Image 1 (spheres, rainbow, N blue to C red):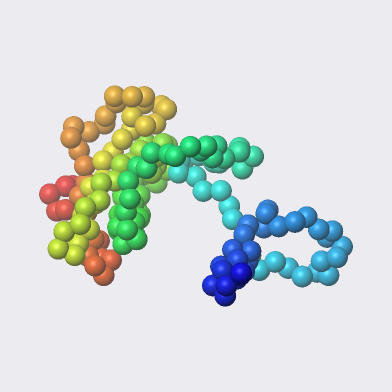
Image 2 (image 1 turned 90 degrees about the horizontal axis):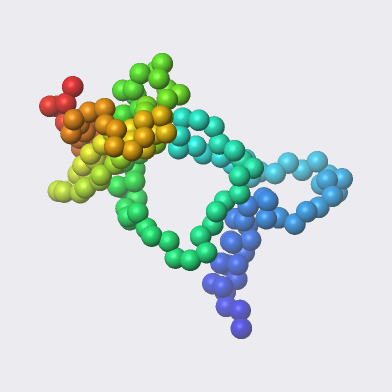
Length: 157
């Protein structure tokens, strides 16, 4: 028997599905009603562009998680990413070395504060290759308060 909460979940799932998952219909029967759904654009983690025609390689078996983070830790890392990107030279914005692809984030939590260490990883960029480092043990350290204020560790230039 279909219970009320099952019905609510079913209706919610049907309402939230992607426009591409909707059944095809004749545009002439639309009567000019515009969709209120936002148009999703591909997100690029690199400084380059994305190819929307590339199919997603969905895993067929269980995948190895990189780690888990709670919502406030994700927000702290995102805020620090924005601060780091502001410090990069504008002229080099198209280079992989000055993009999020060349960064590694280590997030920790202590006494209500999130601490985010940012490591430069230009060895992840195709123009440098594995084993290349532009800094000797260089990293940046940021503290994010519970209110979202971001402070950079003062010892780094």
